Amino acid sequence: MDKAFNYRAKNRKRELIDGVVYAADADTAYIKLTQMGYTPSDMPTLNVKYTIRNFLTKGFDRKELARFYGSMAKRLKNGRSVPEGLDNAIEFVDDPRLKQSLAMMRQFVQEGNSLAAAMKLSGFPLRDVEIVRSTAEAGKSAESLSRISQEMFRAETLRKSIMAVIRMPTIVLFIMYVAIYGVTVFIAPVMMKFFKNALGGNVKLPAFAKAYYDFAASFKQNLTLSTILYIALLVSIVWFVRSPTFRRMLEKIKIVQVIAERSDMSNLWTSFAMLYDAGINTEEATKLLAAAAARPQTKEAFMNMHRLLRSGAPIESAVVKAGFPVYIVRGIQAAVSGGDLVGGLEDLCKDLAADVEEYTMKLKDNIQLAATGVLSAFVLAFFMVTYYPIISATLAQV
Image (tube, rainbow, N blue to C red; front, side, top):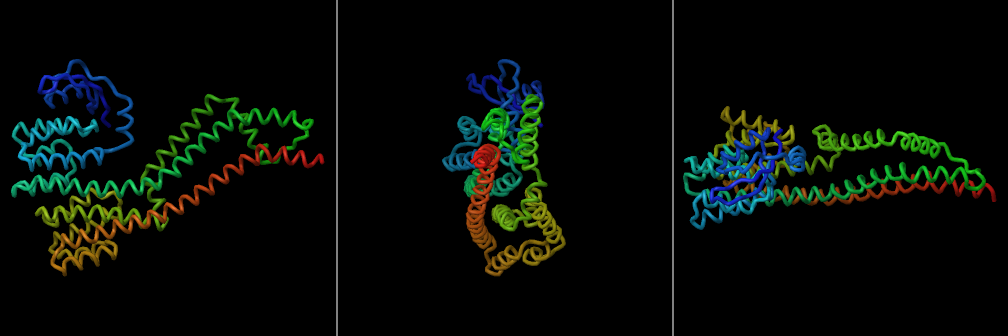
């Protein structure tokens, strides 16, 4: 994994600029800067914050990339050259990884490479590279970039609506995790002293409360080690939640499976329509989408379709045998029979996006109900280990 390095360098206009570059080590970062056309003032230094972010997230910021495509499309339509468009784009892009790739892309273009070739060499998504490459010969690079930008903004809006549903319970669970630590370290010792002195020392703890306070005493006695293990447990949970294993477990829940599948299908078949409309043959398009698919089932279906198309099967037949969901099969067959594959796919993907929105709202209601239940259980547990023993002892003396 590449690390992030801060740099100070002079750009092509001899202006002194600060930024972040990604590389395996400081020496490689220095070389990358010179390849980007910059003149470093000194050796790059490690940026811990962006290095951690690079570990947690992959690829370019999708919103930033979509904004770049849209901006580049407008500049090309207005008669600007590619290097000029890239010079302007580098100024407003905030994502360090994208900024670095744009600087490299500008260098490759100035060396005589085409826009599509420079995008590929700079690490841009292969789907976008192929669309630009196929439309460049017809002089439609600006139109293709504009369309990619619009599709990415649509997909990002859909993704954010799903993430918004997950965010609330995540925050609630994190607060509860921190609260449990606070109660165990700070409140439990105070309560133990109180129980020993209150009501003449006659407070008898229930078995579950006694077990918790014994645990709290042991936790406090080995506080440093306990804290490290507690944080390590949180990190392990986060790692597991981000793993493919957890995603597969989640998709066993029907509504989650529907959202994941239809969201994936909407994004990928929109890409297929764009690739096909750009003049890329169906075999190459399905191969690119198989590589881009995140879900194993979708990846396998596109690979099956790729093999069937290579063997000469028509698209309406290949999609049946490839293992796609019934709604995809029917949608493509309707588009082919209607004589407008691209238009039919775009309508299908819009319907799928609407389905995702509907199911996401249902999931939101279910999650809110579950989060309320978990929070209520936490409050009840807190009451049972703090106030219940006091109330019980008081009533026993009445």
